[in-house]
Length: 373
Ligand code: GLY
Image (tube, rainbow, N blue to C red):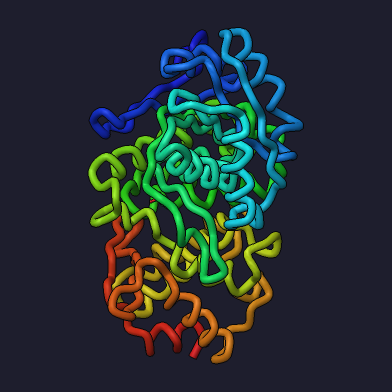
C-alpha cells in the first residue's frame, strides 16, 4: 500500500453489472469524485440513519455538492426494527417524493440495515434505479455491502423478502469505523474470521497474529483485513451471484447464528456478528462430534474468538444447553432460507480454510449436540 495513495481498489467481475470496491480512509469526503462518473443525472438521494447522519452526513453532502450533485436526504431510525414493511413503504414514498427519475442515484450511508433496505428500495422503485453502498460498520464493509443481497424482514423471519441487486460502487471508508462502539467492531471481526475459515488458512494464520491490530483499527492491518475479505467475497459472488453453489459457504455460522438471533430477540443482547462467531464455533464443534473436523482446529478457533472478545458458548449469551432450548433452536433452524424439502442445510468445516455444504444435517445428532447430551 503506497503512503501517498492509501486507497485500494478491487472489482466485482459481473460483466456489465460489475463494480469497484474502494477501501481506505477518507473516502466519504471524496465520494463526489468517485460517484460523479457513474451518474446519468446530477441528483442523489442519500439514505442513512440518525446515528450515522450525526457523524458522516455533512462530509458526504459537502463532497457531492462540490461536484455539482444535488442531494435529498432521508434519515431512518437506527436498528434492525427499521428493516420491516412499514419502514420500507415509507422509504419508497419518501424517495418518490424527492422527484426522482430513472437516472437518480440512491446512496446508502450506514451499516447493514441501511444498506439492505436501501438496496431493496433501489431494486424496486421505478423498477430499479442505481445505488451506491457507503458502509460505515466493519460488518457491512466486509460482508453485507458487497454482493447485491438486499432484503427486509417479515414476522416469519429475517431477510425473507428482497432481491439480488448489485450496487454500482462500494466505498468502504475505513476511517468511518473510528466512531463505532468497540463491540460493533468486534462483531464485524467475526465475519472477517469467517473468510479465513471457509477458504484461506493463511489468512486465518495472519488473523491470529494481527487480529488485535484489526480490532484496534490500526490502519494497515484494518485495510488488509477489509481488502482480503472483500476480495474473497467478490470472487465468490462473481462465480455464483445467486447462491446456487459456492456462495452458500458465506453462510458459514449463519444457520446456527440466525437461530441464536431469533432466540435472543434480534437485538442488543446478541449482535449479528456475535451470533455468526458463536454459530461458527457451534458448527466447528458439531463437525468434530460427527468426526469430520479435528478437535485441535476447533480449539484454535475457540482460542482466537475468545481472544477477540467474541462468544463461544451458549451460556455466555444466557442460553441453557438443555433439551428445551435445543428444540427451540432447531425450530428456528427449520425456518432458514436454505431448508430444502424440510431438511436443514449446514455449512461445516473439514479443517480451518476448508468448508463444505451438508444438505441433510442429521437432526437427532444436532438436537443431542445442542442439548449437550
Ligand atoms: N452474506 C452472505 C452473502 O452475501 O452471500
